Length: 333
Ligand SMILES: Nc1ncnc2c1ncn2[C@@H]1O[C@H](COP(=O)(O)OP(=O)(O)OP(=O)(O)O)[C@@H](O)[C@H]1O
Image 1 (cartoon, rainbow, N blue to C red):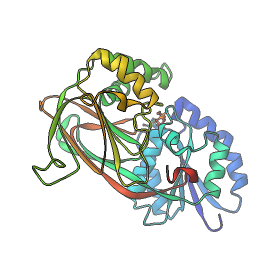
Image 2: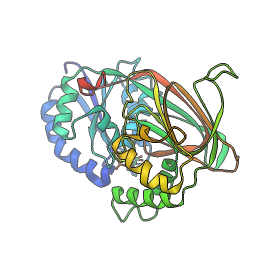
Image 3: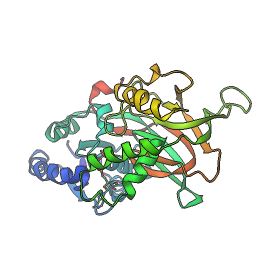
Image 4: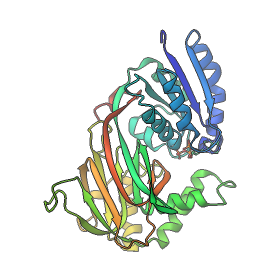
């Protein structure tokens, strides 16, 4: 750690307060372990603050920025890092997971134990991983485009509706994050009807099969860098965070019965491709675009578990855009 500077971005609210508890236990050990090394902790004060803090750490020449929180915090740290050009500045991201869903660390196999995660950060070389980028319309001003990075999965369809309901919910402050998510997943499942959308996978020359615009009734399309979403749904079992491509996994034109009795169990077990081809497909792509057939349909896009906008939206991958300290075995998954 000679001469290195380490910044910790701590979301004390992550995992319904688990982030704060994790950090309080870890801080004395960090102080001991990093004696003689320059390190600093900053606490998030509001939603989105983790991005600003990560950007400041990168700009101040920190070599490692550690996200202490859940998928939302990791995602915001990645956004700040990308905006500050962290890779070019020789900075890497570390993760101490203390959130609710923990989907990204499930893919990277980052230890759940905070002490083990800290030791990993202090003793492992960083590796280059891909970063996703999405541009989507702002929900209340469709002419304004929201651009952001994501590290795990960005999805649209029922998942976007669930996240939108969770974020707007007034009961969220009274019951646990996991329970709120579970509740809205079932409620949304009952009322969701796949809206018609147009989509293109990979930009091929107009008129060719590659760049051809197609149409479907959208149940869910996951533009995946990582493998899990929604707290352990194994939606993209073959996704690789360093192959320079997304795994695009799509479920479409499902009836309510098929969604509950076929798609949900298949999602949990990672066997989506056992569904018939007219209801599911998976494809490797670096670029994706989707727009609603009916302009008035508000179809929500979520990125790393937070609302990122509404359709129309476009995705592109930034190959090896970010340095991350993750277990070595996940380099070539
Ligand atoms: N001080 C704060 N006040 C209010 N919200 C905050 C604060 N700090 C962070 N947040 C927000 O808390 C949200 C949730 O954080 P995070 O994703 O780390 O935990 P989680 O949702 O419990 O875990 P997961 O995303 O893994 O399910 C993020 O949207 C973040 O912007």
